[in-house]
Image (cartoon, rainbow, N blue to C red; front, side):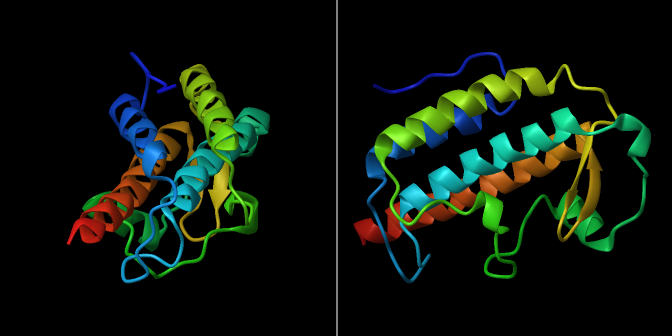
Length: 161
């Protein structure tokens, strides 16, 4: 069962993510200390967790503030590798089952569609780059997802060597 996503935010990234599920057990400790499954589940937990926070946020509490880390991330569209640790709420369980990845994938697919309908000032506070509104959050999710897809690609390419 290979999920497919059409006409939604992060369409290409989600299809790439789905294509990597078959390689969930791949690991290369030179690239990452955790297997592909961890990166897959982490991306999905991040999308789903952030959506829930955005959806429950009160737009009246959004305050625009400059954040140097965010400015750097958004300027270069990159997250430096090995610099930060993922918050506990988006760290996958020790044992990740494929059915869990598919369940999180379907939930993320649904939440990404709903994300577009949230108010512009729906927001969440990232531990390193501060408060993000809906559109900044979309940009962060794209950068974050691509960051982990690149790591997976490197794991799989390194494995072929």
